[in-house]
Length: 273
Image (cartoon, rainbow, N blue to C red; front, side):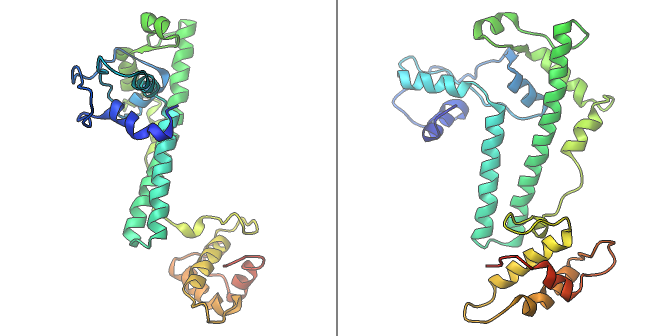
């Protein structure tokens, strides 16, 4: 795995169509042509994730540059997903902590939710791909084909580009029985961010969504109370009631907003500041 300290350097080697100026001149700005994919690369292709573009190293590359290039050139799908998750999460929390607009926060949350759906889709694709690998090993019908020369040279399985593309067309075809499975984890309604349903790990456990929401609104209300102003859970319960009613959050059964007394009870054992 690439050293995080060398991330900017590794990105320049792996992805840049316009390399940053350096002491070395690139021999040829032609991207390496892939004739086969690793498992991670194949799954990414089927999921329609753009793979990084590799460029030739300069003839006078240092040992450090060569080592870095070899590390970066090994595509790690899990690492890519984790880095993307970390980046989107950081953007979202930064937006909240910096007091950005509700729209900006919503957009960053939507991006985070979309990434979660992508991860679910990739999990499904990975299972389907491994099923095809198992068929290949048993000699059962499958479009997947191994690149024997590169697999032997690299010491791991490589699958031909044409066969992976054929498999991708099959899995993503509207006539494919697996299409519904893929779509269930990758599409759906535009999910509006509802932070009030995110449980605080320090709170007592509850299976009730309205209680989780009431505790969230309580914390939001307390944030806006000046430090010198006295308050207690009873005094803010009416405001919590209004917030629940405004967001149409009801008691079990979905017909009535929880009473003020129920809200006060929901705050028992909850640290609001």
